[in-house]
Length: 325
Image 1 (cartoon, rainbow, N blue to C red):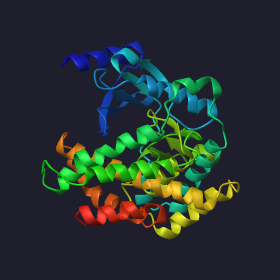
Image 2 (tube, rainbow, N blue to C red; image 1 turned 45 degrees about the vertical axis):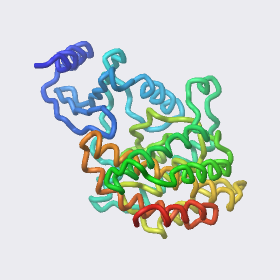
Image 3 (tube, helix red, strand yellow; image 1 turned 120 degrees about the vertical axis):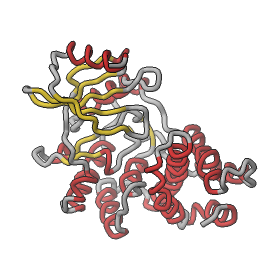
Image 4 (cartoon, rainbow, N blue to C red; image 1 turned 135 degrees about the vertical axis):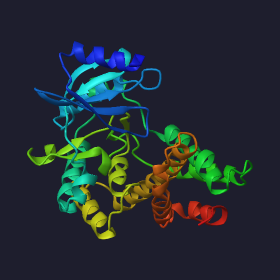
């Protein structure tokens, strides 16, 4: 038994959780690992986030925040932030991705997710918490663009060290992000997509949509979580379904200007696709997590689709001139 295993066992004992079975569930794109622990009293999820690589305090903060707003997030049964260990309520295995494979109607669960976003976006950020939540503004959005240049482009050009015209690429993004309005509107969960949503049919209303992986939440544009859901890097959503869900969202906010909203949506969608192409490439090259490569073609298609919006014409032309299709 190694040192980390000893620390975990001591933590479980401190929580009076005599474990009869520990099952490794998954890692993710971070350094966190998840285990299902079982005993006679039931089951729970152990989050193992080594403190030299991860910080569980934001997860604790946003769990309490979202519980206060009335959403379905895992209750925290026990915590040791210093050692990077949390014992969490087990929501089960029915992520949106899994229940869709089982044949549940896509519109039912996605409408519930849209309704949750509508509810979240109608609530102001809790005033006495604002100073503890980062801003997802122009500076951070611009910084993330570098992931495309530093990781995805070398992968496309077989690690060629000199790639031309990147200055023009960055300059285009400076202009695009200036056109993104209302950047400090709402809490943004940041990774609001099918793998991080759990279907809880025994609950009512928007509580049927369980939330995972929200520790990186920030204050930003209302369009971001919407596009994260509808422009999912990991699964295809048919255009007619996207249109239906977008209309459902917009009906709740008749005050929004359609042209301005759509421009912001597509600019931030393109930004996210560039970022994700870079992150998935980095996971492959640096971290040997090759399963993310399968999603690159979808992300590239969605990036090109976003560039069909007139506001992204300059980026569309740059991609066409400088990137392999």
